[in-house]
Length: 148
Image (cartoon, rainbow, N blue to C red; front, side, top):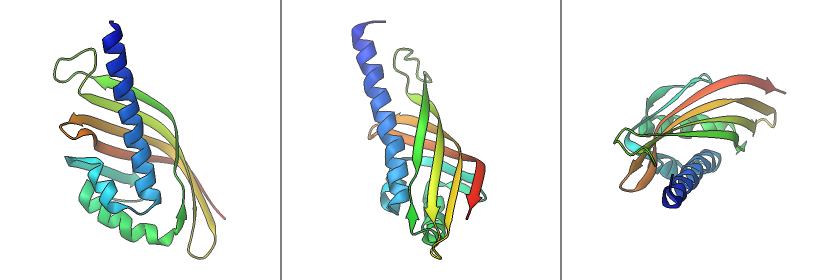
């Protein structure tokens, strides 16, 4: 592996990391325009693992916009990110797609003032597009929750 390829891989890793951070910030800040912009045109999101819906990202954004009004305070903490670059276009050094697995803890507060915390794992798919890295998929696998 050459030094140039190493730099490209590092740059891709940083871009994918920024994409995932952007996802958390968009959801936490109720920025549904930013949420939609994170996805590739045919991107999908699947929240069935936490009691939600699955569908095209734009439709899921509408659902989230309504659902998240129940939680005026929320903060995603997405950690332990594992990134695997794939080579669908035959570029083994950098890849044009990535699979990302990341754990999350999501403390929130209901409008009533009660706290709700959940945690689990995200499976993100990302694609390199003309606009940069974009999400092709988001799948939520909630593994625990606590409601006080």
